[in-house]
Length: 285
Image 1 (tube, one colour):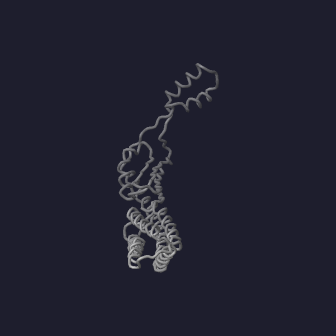
Image 2 (cartoon, helix red, strand yellow):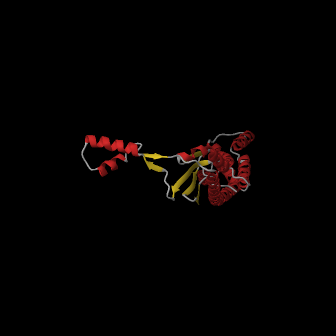
Image 3 (cartoon, one colour):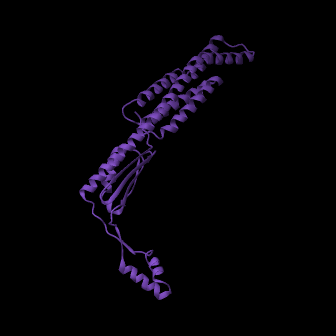
């Protein structure tokens, strides 16, 4: 079962004086790109939280947010009275005005507020870990649901490619006959005597250069391998991406050897389906 790298998970916990919100958002990326936002008081736990997220999500551009809202009477910020009084004194010395106006200006200046760093107790940190695990579970569910949509789309397009390959197989004898007739006509138009045996040998050699038997077999095998890998237990977007490259290589070779307009039209359709798979494959975990 494949998973998408797109996902969202959120969990909120209510403590006696705090509301703690954990958010996880992820988009596609070649590797794990983790960006963390949290209050400075919780930075000491950042490395451990990062390791937990990295172990579970493995790939994607992940934004992790830890938000704290104080709901009790206490507050984490206090007015730095000494600094504010000095600001107001200096303001009075350079301008005239009401104290309320000076106070408003002083509170906007640096260091007017001081924040006491709260220690994280064990119970609070345990609650944060549980909230993070729940948010991770939510984002994984989201990724799985998105993966199911992608898998359905991939299977429909692989089925289309198999149908187009079947048309190529059906058309191939006619293609070879057409190429042979074209060459025989070209020689006949020369109006010169040609050794029949030598011409037949050269014709066989020429037709062998345009033979696509191996490409048809390999393409069928790659399509089958893609379907099996898609249905495997683990999501492996990189492996599926490599198989897509091999599928594209065989389609391109068939196109270059076709030398027959109706078959080349089928090849164009095959390339179009494969490009749509590749675009979606960028989002597979």
